[in-house]
Length: 578
Image: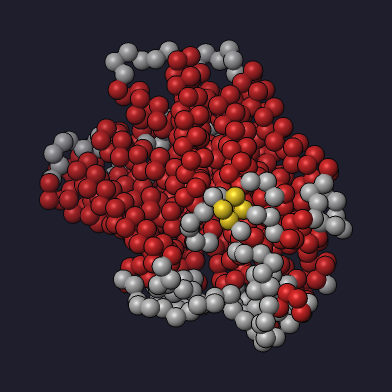
């Protein structure tokens, strides 16, 4: 029962979260805090406090940055949401790993060389150099909106998991997560974030691998896991339906997610900031390659875990049997089912989910502090702040932004499934941001007016579609087809009057009326809508308004992909003005 945000503990969660579990979980939190204190102590005499806080002095090594990139992208949404996605809808979303390899190649060849060539610390500095201060401010505001929408969802996920295995109040848990995260992020800056990310990535992998292996053995091996999923039509990778309103197809998962991931990795300050912490572009590209391997691995492990969970409960669905309420509770429920045989497993699981959340949140807070200071506060100052004052300003920003994110957790509980909610909210800002940067890097004729109009219109368009869709889902106007489940193997007391025949997880499938077409469009296409709107409208407005100001001719402002066609500054200007 939910009452004022307090979630009553399910019967299955009465199983003990023992001393070993508490020790594992507390150890992870303690290590994170200690790393923050240590990095703050090491950096106390650094002469360039701002650069040290934002890019770690630009002398970080490949291993911690690679681990940080992986941890920053893989949140608790992945750990809890992907298994639920496989269980409820089948394996089509697993094809998302195909997009990742192309994203890393695009990032290394197209976007990173531009940021490195300009020697900047904030990706939004590029927008001022290419366009003007207004476009830079718009990009920064869009990024902050993205983080403020996404971080509360990231906080909610481990709080939900912790509630399910301990019974601790969800909102009290959210406060605990944020307090630890704000503490070490504020004290240690990027180096603390990166090194805690590295540790948390190891914990995250350990938790997911352990659960997947133990679950497979419990079912009876990989062949039996696959058979049970195949028999219920869950194994599906190549649904080639071109209909954009179908929730997941091969095209939407691969092509739609490609652009979403590209936006999240290539121009997102949280990712760019880490790449810029490397001493040179070659090492930055190496970290991107390792990131691609790591993300593909953890996504595959999480998807496989979902397949294992269904194989375990193939004849006694815990949702239909009222043992849990939501698909997002499947993984915690599964872990607690195995807890009696494996002491410490719940603690490792919770530590893994919290690790994923802490890394994403700390990355977001650290990058937000840099963006707010570099792109909003610093340009307004007549007299630059001292290094000490600037460092304090960024630390205060971390505390304020983190506190706001905690408050916004209350709204997250009202959203739909984790994967769809996360991708939908991300898509609001991902497309417009990527569109603005791509407009600047690929189209020398684009001007600041075009970038502003294209960015603002695309942002509002995608926000309208996304929130309209969430409202339609909440009103029961949109329902998605799900895979069958069974209660054949449940004890009579858990069947609740259901017949032994296969059931579905959707009780009410009647739709009162068809919502607007764009509300029915798969959420995976949102980024494309924003991206194309920003570029096409930006080019149109640029053509109508003309080059009001002399466009910059610095080749470093353009991606290497087009520099071969514009080899000299004179050629750039000739292209623009003749």
